[in-house]
Length: 212
Image 1 (cartoon, one colour):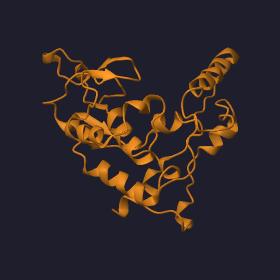
Image 2 (tube, helix red, strand yellow):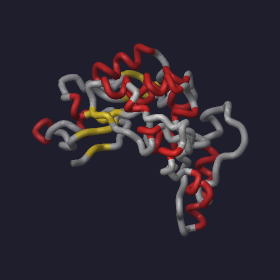
Image 3 (tube, helix red, strand yellow):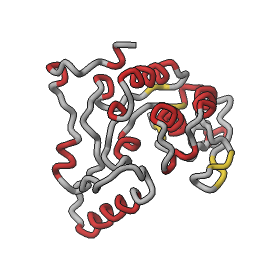
Image 4 (cartoon, one colour):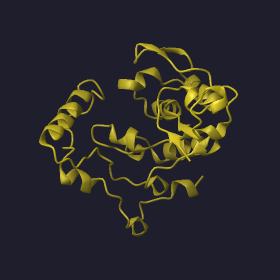
């Protein structure tokens, strides 16, 4: 099974060959994540500036793609095409994933940004959507360790390019953050991002998806 990780909102990716498509079984829907995330957190920096209204989440629930041929203020162009008629099973949705957490400067998970009640609401929205739900590692027990962007490159020039790229990214994204970002090549960044498998011994841990 092939599932596309694409933010183009292009139905060609999942349309059948007979309809001129690529025939993939499904694709991620960033619009769904962004719509829910912005409503819950109030964040509207970077690519989140295209979202933030309940009407966005309503549209995502109905047809997955919010940007279905309409103009994106962030991208400065028209994005996507109309997905109506495609089965919900073609779309994979989430409230957290490695991109959306790792793309943050400090790699905070959703539980660090909203209340526990908000987490339950997010889980409920995910599981009642008509689409295929995807859980990120540790999400089921509200892991609070970050998932920071890390690499292990042997090429010094590539490491330099990655570090400089991250620095440029956060010049405009999440302006309220202070301090420096974790070193992508640093072993401590990788270690900080490991799951805490002792969660059952921690009374503060709660199983989000068992409490709905």
